[in-house]
Length: 477
Ligand code: GLN
Image (cartoon, rainbow, N blue to C red; front, side):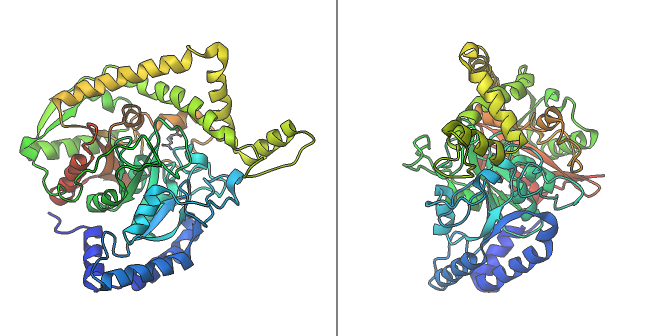
């Protein structure tokens, strides 16, 4: 039984003055200096800005309103805009781009006395599951530097786990928050689509992208969500909703909960991942939770559907990077030549692969064939998850089917790499919230377990993770 968790303890110390925001920042800067040359979690460290924000937080605390963050240290994935600070998206294309505006979730972190210490490494334009496609070099796993940290929010996962930051803002299109949370042994929430504004987030696939937090624990996730959630007139798809993350954090009642489970979600999963998942399931059962068998007959379709939806949306979002208005530019003989050369030099291999695939799928002769088919499959998958969630309050299954793999092991085999997303993409296709948390350890390698809830039940799945943190124990071998 754990009395208090990392983030809770830290907030308490900052609030009561046991540690000042200045001292806390210096501690983090020291850790960044000593560890980040190996991890490569940061693209840009904003030391000066962090010092200013820390002063602001310290004053607010003195005046008695330091909430919500009281000077907690944040890292921001480098695909969110922060006015005046370089935003690269992990790409040569935007190596020198400085945005003139700030993303809504980032603005809300600042408004709530969060201290931003830098912009975090990521797969190029968030395309990847291993953190290896960044133009700024791969990030390493915080628990084992020979291994990948997961992606695409690679720096976020590693920085939270190695305690370079207290909280991180990531984005999740097909698993990019949950996958690195799983591989680094921290907690990551992909919120319900539309609960958090995408204003100022560089698009990957706009019908799937959601910003969300990574933290050491459920409390950190709840705190972060209190700040970043809610309607934003600058992103018209945001919902007029706020969920009671902090108020319901300790309200999980195992006796009044049903967990949906099916063996289909363990198909092809590594033995240790399977054992950790079943361990967490048994924990809930031992506390009185009812386990109900659900059916997800078309789960196999999620993975191909994701790629057919994502590719064309991505290719379309990338059209604006033509070297003319901003971004990397190589002058050619003609306009066409300039655009072609700028793109050829500015983009990495995975980006080009996706632009080619997306353009192919969108071409006139294929319209009505692949993308439309994928949208039909998407609705079919949505319906079966909806049906499963009529019988259960949330579904429990692994986050990633495999343990963190070695750097270089999969990067030349895109299909192998894409397979890592098989269990994270359903939440994006359905728009449902899903959270990954450490459910087990195989030696020193963490194993993430995932809870997927119904739309706008984000606070509920966070409270279930909190319950496991307090009453349960990760599996280990
Ligand atoms: N790994 C997935 C992809 O490469 C997910 C990316 C993401 O969620 N940003 O598309």
